[in-house]
Image 1 (cartoon, helix red, strand yellow):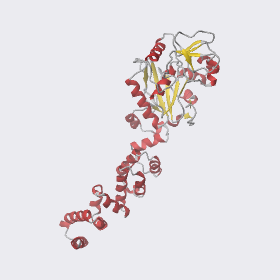
Image 2: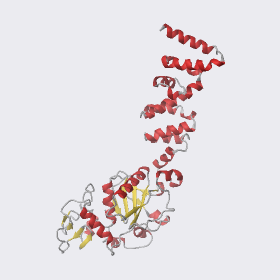
Image 3: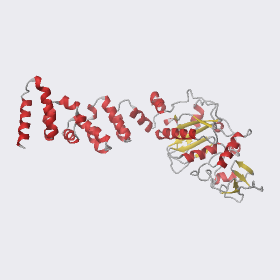
Length: 403
């Protein structure tokens, strides 16, 4: 112990005397060695060799760096905050980077923002942005998406790198596919989920290869108004876009991913929320081609659909004084005196979305879309109701209006 004290005193004396310039490197090395063995001396050594210590903060032990941080050494506070964030201790890091971030370089603030994004610390990123301390970066663009910013404010190179579009420009339908689908969303999580659905579909296209082609996700941000009622069907106000957007030609359907709301199809537009699973996506895709739900339909829909006659969907036969096809079984779709029938006695994906698409229903689906007389209801048909008077319900009677 006495030897350590004597060594410490000798180092302090040498440093306080300034010693010879040619010996500065040696003294610095002694200071670093002494800090490692007697951390309590860190402040004395730090203030004698500030630049050298700041250049090596990341190599200091946790104990040493923490001592500098709690003694209000600005660069050490920031370095300690980054170390805590790297170790998933975002809340503990907050007071350290908050008091030191304004003094940091753009590169260091960019590193901080990347770690905050990794922990999804949206409030912290927002705080940095409000103080004009968030540099142009991947995290800054992600924050814009998180807040539903207008597409025009998103950096084009960022969007390209992340695999989504900001407009319809240069978007072309793919002629090798029977149906082309526009994929859209108004929020950040929707972009990743749409891309995931597209990739999964391409691995196992249904009902056959070349049936559907999906565009890159298109970010709409605040240019569309979608309801935020989790317990209700997802829906958006398409009227302004139907009037003001120059829609690309050759596209048949829209998949719109909202933040909340249950999945449904209306007039060639599928609405899903970003927590949806792939089975629901496939279920709703079949609605595009006229398949009906095999669980009880909404009362308003039963009021007109269940009074029809015969085959009203590839999987639904209304026995209104008619005999159902051989082998068809009662369906729960119509809870009315007039009964409905489905083509299988087993549960199907149209009754429970968690059930995989069966070979039987895949064949029915393929038969439907290859029928020369079949014409699905496209989103362009749906948009006509905003542009010209028409009896939209009658037009939809034997085409799926919603599911």
